[in-house]
Image 1 (tube, rainbow, N blue to C red):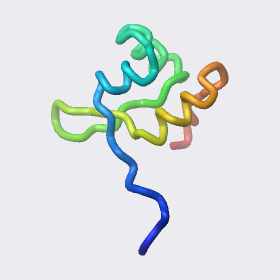
Image 2 (image 1 turned 90 degrees about the horizontal axis):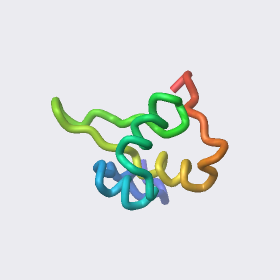
Image 3 (image 1 turned 135 degrees about the horizontal axis):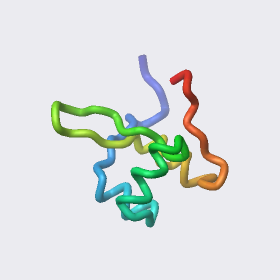
Image 4 (image 1 turned 180 degrees about the vertical axis):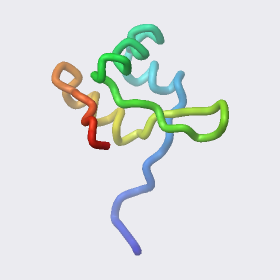
Length: 70
């Protein structure tokens, strides 16, 4: 199946912090509050964020909410 969309990249913590301008503590607090996308597990001790989810948050950070049904 061919799509026009490039594959969704996984961003590591430092990249997410650079792009969003958030501090590490603020990022994790927002994840707890449901106002920032959750990480996806890559390996046992490795996680990252979907680039599309981070981009979605960046379009409207004030009103972003994680949908529970995901």
